[in-house]
Amino acid sequence: MRARSIRGAGIVAAATAVAVTATACSAPGGEDGSVGDSAVVGIAYEPESLSPLLGFGKDGNSKIFDGLLTHDAEMNLRPALAAELPKVSDGGLTYTYRLRDGVKFSDGKPFTAKDVVFTYRTILDPKTNNASKGELDALKTVEAEGEDTVVFRLKYPYAPFAERTVLPIAPEHVAGRQDVNNGPFTTKPVGTGPYQLVTWSKGEKISFKANPGYWGDAPKVKNFTMAVIKDDDVRATRLRSGDLDGAILPPNLAETFAKDGDRKTHAAKTFDYRVVTLPTGNEVTGDTAIRRALDIAVDRGAMVESILNGAGKEAYGPVPTDSEWFTEGTERTHDLDRAKKLLDAAGWKAGGDGVRKKDGVRASFPLWYVSGDKLRQDHALAYASDAKKAGIEIKVQAGTWEVIEPRMPEDAVLAGGGSPADPDFDQYTLLKSDLAGDGFNNMAWYDNPAVDKALDDARRSGDRAVRGAAYDTVQRELVKNPGYTFLTHIDHLYVVDDRFGSLTTQIEPHDHGLASGPWWNVEDWQPQQ
Picture 1 (cartoon, helix red, strand yellow):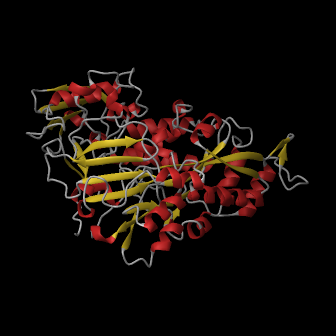
Picture 2 (picture 1 turned 90 degrees about the vertical axis):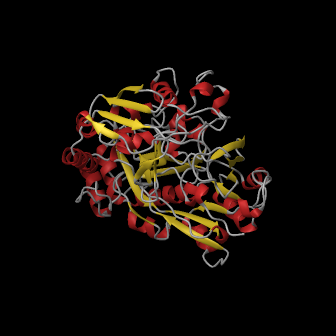
Picture 3 (picture 1 turned 30 degrees about the vertical axis):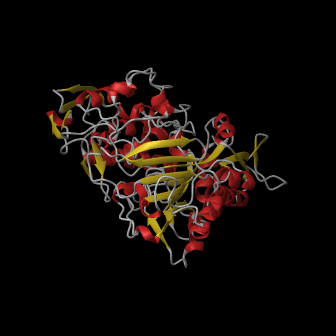
């Protein structure tokens, strides 16, 4: 669970937010074009870098870049910089890609197989600060055969490898001539995508213009701006005032636009979950009885109805209940009486102040959420309320990630994650014990040998049945010892000006608003004049 995977709305005082976001974008139409060919949308966060070598756009839809492959609306893989889907041979160990002819980077230089090799080798270089390089663990070698063919050879048959090749390709002639971690390419990139970067004012906006040399159809939306507005309420206010053409909003705020005839609400199904980390290093949250009691004391159904207004579902793990990978029988029924009995049996006795104690330790711990994120705040408060009924005291606190991150080894966090492409993508980084303490991976410092083995077995097998059995093991182990309390899977809601017509959404990961949302394919929009 990387920083990019869980960062939500940051702390912004209302008055300050209005002042800052007033400069975040111009009125719809922007500075560089008419209303008809421009769009300005409000998002909740921004990337730390615009370099794919450091992780930007690794799941696709980066606007500036293309990968060898991309996803369509149904999340099926289709060719992008590759001329066709890869040829898989050697028992799943070799992937061969033939490249599209005539593609150029936005600086006019040709795209070749050397750029693909450079991108993957640089990401895997130990000197490159890419926190997601473990996702390419299966890759043994990448080689160019001429200028139009790339061959990947794997260490083991990694079933979802083709999904990893939506990763954007960087130009060797630019990025290869500078410091990969701190060079100008990290903020002023050059790519092959439908848009070019115009400006990135950190904390305010990211502005793009159509790439005149794009290999695909020319975008009708010539100017596209993402206004970075971290506070949900401020984002809704900006949309209502007409300063934004669209925005991602939590359910309660999206509902306020339901009767607005000039705007449409678009709902996207997701793998996005909200979860409470229960750090092993905390003597309360690391206790298995506490973990199991919280897992059944929480009323997930009430959260779906009262917090999400029905726009989501109960979560029992990283895999949604309607996924083919979900293990039937691992649902946890809300049962407060049973939660109390589990705590009693484990020696957590009720105290005079209503908070349980064991060996002189009070069943009390802090729970942090990111300030300005209403959904996380509401989830945290509801979770604390349910825990209190079982005799567990949770002190809910808000802060920025800069405040929260140093506390993660011992303090609980209301986090998020989720990836629809393959179960390996989310579960491995979330639960693997040797990733504990690695940035935002395994935030709970979860340590379960049975889970470690199952994750490795699933990652290294190309057999669907073997992988399914391994992920069944993971989900059943999370019932026995839940190092996290999974709460809800959330549908993403976007409100967009009606003049952009009928728009689509994909099945979305936790990351939303930036690369997902109705603007996942803004280059294909047909704005009405």
